[in-house]
Image (cartoon, rainbow, N blue to C red; front, side):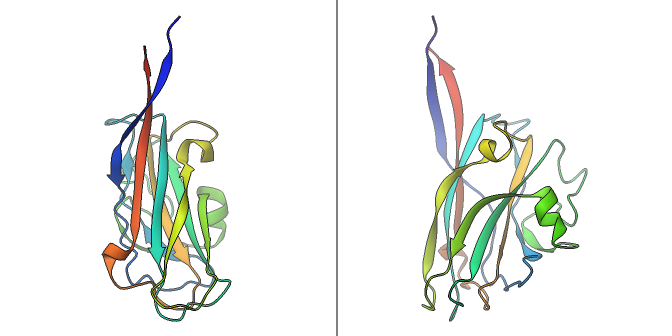
Length: 170
């Protein structure tokens, strides 16, 4: 009988430049990451996402930073999800219902202090789990917040990465 062993990839950077991202009270303004192609390259059975976001000046206590995940069976270059096109860029969604219908919530960062330029790590989460146990062919992040001020201006103070998961038979 064959034995399955888990295998992790090296850390993969998710390009999502949230430096100076402005606050959005409705969470409809945010930043999308570059699209990640899981259909033609790595074909991971899961991706574990981890990272940190650094607030700017005087963030509001009990405000939030949300890290959403979108998934698609086709490239966003072919078929956009609302205003998302799979390219790292600021986006304004058509309405807040898009968040409920087209995105999965991966992580929530609750801001607990008004401390300037404080980095908040978010716990690792499974992309496959968000989509019922199967990885989408194409996926990416959408980051938004309502801290009341723009996020930290230095791109290096924000980190988004994932580790791909595969299985080997021994």
